[in-house]
Amino acid sequence: MSETGSAPPQPSVGELVGEISRDLSTLMRQEVELAKAEARQAVQHAAKSGSMFAGAGVAGHFVLLFLSIALWWALGDAIGHGWSAVVVAVVWAIVAAVLFARGRAESKRVEGLPRTTDTVSKIPNALRGQEEKNA
Image (tube, rainbow, N blue to C red; front, side):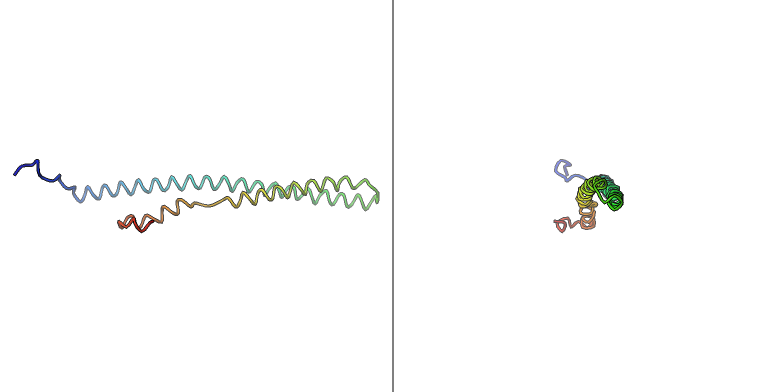
């Protein structure tokens, strides 16, 4: 019989297992890299919102400080010397409100690891050869 018409040799079970092992290893490395990238992005957003909350806390502290000074001065003088401190306190209140609003908006942008969660959830079906269930 001629070898030109025969089918190519089939890979052995060991070769198939080795190929599956390499593919799984590659898949896991890719998932870890994706998780790292998503975690970095989430940490950046969390740090930004945390600093905004910290700024709002400092500004809120100044609101209390200047309102207390203004009230003290106004009650002590009963004329206009203390009202300049009230204006400063109102400015700090506005700063605190803006920083808090920005911090809250940034904290809502923190999503976690959505793509990693999605792709990792598809691995069991892929291992069973049922990728169509991942759609």
